[in-house]
Length: 441
Image (cartoon, rainbow, N blue to C red):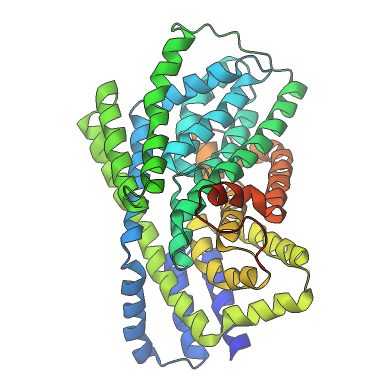
């Protein structure tokens, strides 16, 4: 029954995926087919169970954090906050050859630190920096590649919607521990992208900054402080126990809204459009979670996670080999699946394996999100890839030649995060959020 259910579930899902069926619908339909074919239940009986699972999957207070952080990121993009972060980043790296590429990486890290969205970072930084890079003679394909590859730092440096989603899917892993661990992990990924971006910039002959800012360095720094202060409010409030991650999302929205009102760069029509866009994207995510709850139930009833776990463990008992297999599999799947459905599908499968080899839930979660974040920059389904190319008005074929060498450095960063648990666990350990910062025994 297990083999039948596994084959039917994943084959039918990928057939519908390549046929253009929406992912959420494909997950639900594939789950129903697998449940009926494997004899778990009848179609009539499964309809009632599926409805219950959809409701229970969405009945979570923590899920409210996702739309609030998404809205906060959108307000930052349109409210003048992102522009001030870019100016601050350019001030810090202006003396480096290819400084605009370094500015892009650093600005995406800053933006991620207060928005938690890689797609929003791709759109915001691309729309601001692409014209500047074009004016200074940068290859648009190169500029877009750097923007696309540095955007995933936004889902690692807290606050982070995907880390909250992982926490819920994994059964309540500490969001605060995940957030603290994300600082070093996101920083390493950003440094890896920056190194290759600067190497490419040197080969292309890009120079240091010759732009003369109208404002003084002190004023640029002061302008950036209110935006960066959002990080202190969100993380400080969570770590101090003043509010939960969900409440932190509300606080961030209010704070960013006040800043946008002060900067006067967002009118009521823009706010209305932002609210509408946030509602649409949130509804899509919630529908995916509901459908994935059905798939999780079917996999649990048919024993699919345990069967896959035994298969992988049968290949090797060495944790390093097992982790390499998991990473390669997730990187390939990340080329075809967006981050949200990938988290919902693969956490129930791979988390038990990670626990069996002595990996902590926090370490695994950060490795998983890093891996799937890298997948968001790769064709054919990379969300950051499509948004970045659209904003820069370039073709995927041209961008790919620059993405490939940067991807290699991102893979190196992923291996460091995978095999050195202290990278992910040091800050949570020092903060008293976890009891160990190595492999569990």
